[in-house]
Image (tube, rainbow, N blue to C red; front, side, top):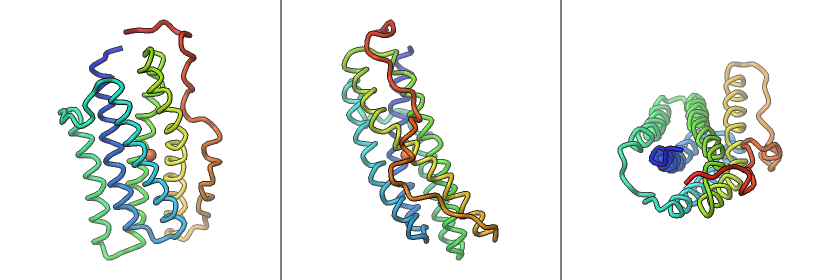
Length: 198
Ligand SMILES: [Fe+2]
């Protein structure tokens, strides 16, 4: 595995999670539905935790999580752009439309978030020792929450768009943990199951 590119993926994933905190904060300013506010509040808390988890993973790999690497700038920019899109939505003078903009922005943010964790999960077998354990534990803690985030995001966007269009719909059921029942990410291989690469 290309170590430098792997480290870039870790730092970009962290950058994306940090941007996700700002995305949920902005989305909450647009949310009108009480159940949506409740869910996004919970996911904001989880996303803050994901930042902490990725910082710890970086520390295990000897990576400075605050390194201002050029490879993180596009992810930073993308996060800022989603927040700006929601601020534009709030200025439309259409609160229902602004809520839809926020739903769409959360879908975009969570799609890449989930993809990053999926990629990280697939790289666990390429690692060894403490690094392998650290990434496997992070994926185990965060991976299923990310599945819940993307399912929630798509479900709310679909339901609220249909509702606004005057087509009958029902919002997704509240996140009571059942979205995490089916693992979204491949579980890590047991240590020693594959040839390890330095
Ligand atoms: Fe997420």
